[in-house]
Image 1 (cartoon, helix red, strand yellow):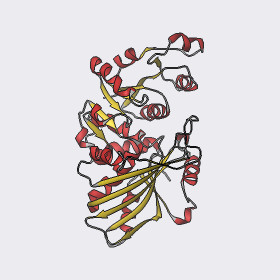
Image 2 (cartoon, helix red, strand yellow):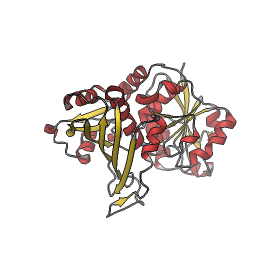
Image 3 (tube, rainbow, N blue to C red):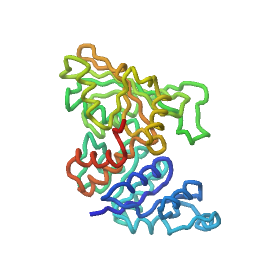
Image 4 (cartoon, helix red, strand yellow):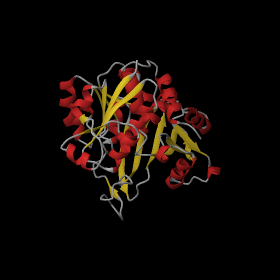
Length: 340
């Protein structure tokens, strides 16, 4: 079976999801949508994607810009088995009525509330629970990073308590109108929403989160303090567990990777498309054990970390692979995840 996929919203996440889906042998892109004839709409055509007009967009504007239009979003969805909604926050929830009316399966992103779907999804954490689902929400970049790490640690060592402080980037690189430009903004809602969001993937996980926003566009960084139920004798076992999972990258002290600028430079040099980092990034020197307590930093590339999760969510929904490991292996190989 080859699943026909429509991508509703061809922006930061949507264009990455479309490219990722196009690399899968068991999936096919039927079209992508844009509201305006931007450079991304033109690039979509150059990549061979049919472009459909979304929202209040006007076909005449696209045609005036020399961008061929295949039809409306509704027509795109009618030709699809599943729609991956990558539209702006809250717009996705508004689109649910359309998807329900057309009887198409749907995937939303983490900007929408968990109630929009049957399941919040993370491939490492709850793939099997989402087999055959019709409505799935791929959680946000921060929740994806935390859920991956929590799934691995809970499965191997047990988690008694988890406290995470998120140092959040202020904006994506393309978002020139956002700030702060010079400041650090505490998120005054304590605890922050990230912990409860992780619990939509891993119910009962004892996690509490707080966040600050800083003036950078590169990545998020999490500082994690985890009390383990069954701690290993040495931190080397923790590092070994992380290093064996392709969706984590560990940098040794000798790598010269001091922080997010070097991570992004490494990503560009390894040849990943757009310089993306779809893995959780950890530092060996930034991972320590003291008794039952594990401390570690991880960095999260907000533009791309959820991309493989969308691919795996499609496989789970259509039971193209019933085993999470097999699906992730296919996705990892096609997207060069885990490549050093």
